[in-house]
Length: 75
Image (cartoon, rainbow, N blue to C red):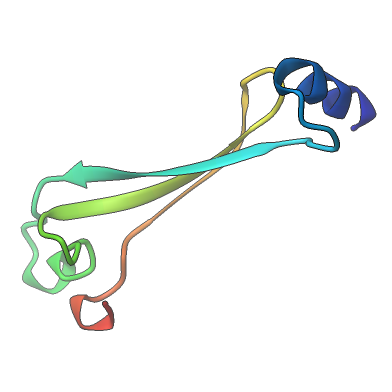
C-alpha cells in the first residue's frame, strides 16, 4: 500500500492516495422487453447504464461496477 501511495504522490502530487474512482454513463439501445426497459431509461432521455471503475497507480483496473438507474418512477 505504501508503494502505491508513493507512486500516486509522484504521479499526480496528491499524498495518501491508493486508488482513483470515476464513473460514466454508457448509452445503450432500448431494451426489447417492456418490463425491463424502464430500468435503463434516464430522466434526460435515452437508455443508459452507469459504470463506476477504480484504478491503481499503474492505471490497471482494480474493480468495476455497472448498474442501471432503477425504475423511471424512482427518478
